[in-house]
Image (cartoon, rainbow, N blue to C red):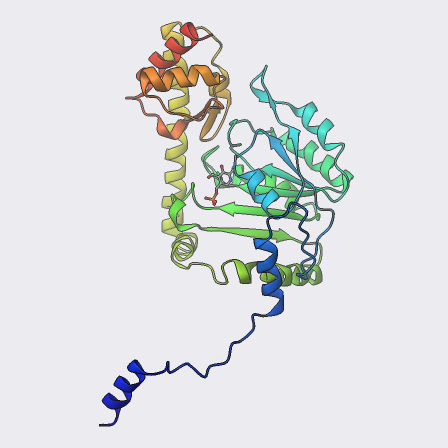
Length: 335
Ligand SMILES: Cc1ncc(COP(=O)(O)O)c(C=O)c1O
C-alpha cells in the first residue's frame, strides 16, 4: 500500500539515482576516446597496450575501394604494388614482384584470395607459388582478403588454393573470410578473421590483443547470421545444397561473360573484348574510359563504377543486348 505514494514522491522529487556516484571511465578507454576526438594529423596513440610495429601495408593497385580506408583508419602507412597490366588486361606479375621487393621485412601484403575486385584477374597457381616463396623469403606478412570463395571456379576448395599454399607452409598469415557474397548474407555482417601463428603460445598472445581491439569496437558479435552459416556448414545436406548453388551461380557468371563478348563481336564493336572471358569471378575491368561510362549513363541509363568495372552478377541474358548497344555507341562515339 505504501508503494504508490513512494512512486509519486520519487517522480516529483529527486531522482532515485541521485546518490549514485560518478564512475570514472577505465583510463584506457578515456585515453582512446580522447585520441579519437583529437583532429590533429600529428596525433599519436601510445595509450593502449596493443602491439604495434612500424607495420606498412602494401595493397594491390587497383583494389577494393575500401581497403585503403581500413588500413589508414588504424594508422598504417598504405603503399601500393602493381597488379593490373592495362595493356594485356591481365596480371602485371613482374611489376608485382618488383614493387614488393622494396617492402621492408615485416610489412603486410594484402592479397585477394580469389576473384580479385575490381579486375577479375587472379594469379595462376604457379604464380601464387612464386608469390608465396617471394613473400616468405622477404619476411613479409600475408593478409588474405577472401570475399569470393566459390564464386570463381564454382568450387570452394579450388578457390581456397592460394590461401592454403600459405597456411600449409608453416609460416604466419592473416585471413579475412567473408560470407557476404558466397552465402548472400551481405546485410548480416558475417565473416571471420583467422590468424595463423607459428606456435600455440604466440596464438594466445595474439588473441589477447584482438580482444583488446574488439572490446571497445563491438564487444560481442551479432549472432543471427553466424548461426545461419554454422547451420549450413554443419549439416551435410544443406552444405551440399549450398555448394551446388555456388556452382550454378558460377556457371551463370561464366555464361554471361561469354554472351557479352559474343554479342559485342556479332555487333562488330571495335576492340578486343576477350579479356572479359579470361577474367574471373564477379567482376571484369572492361577498359571503358570514364567519359565513355558517363556517356553510357547519360544516353543509355547504364550505371557502373567510373573505373570501368562491370559487375557480371548485375547482367542477365535479357539485359546483355542493351549493354552492348551502349558499349558500341560509347566506343564508336566517345574517343
Ligand atoms: C575484396 C573485398 N573484400 C571485402 C568485401 C566486403 O566484405 P564484407 O561484406 O564481409 O565486409 C568486398 C565487397 O564488398 C570485397 O570486394
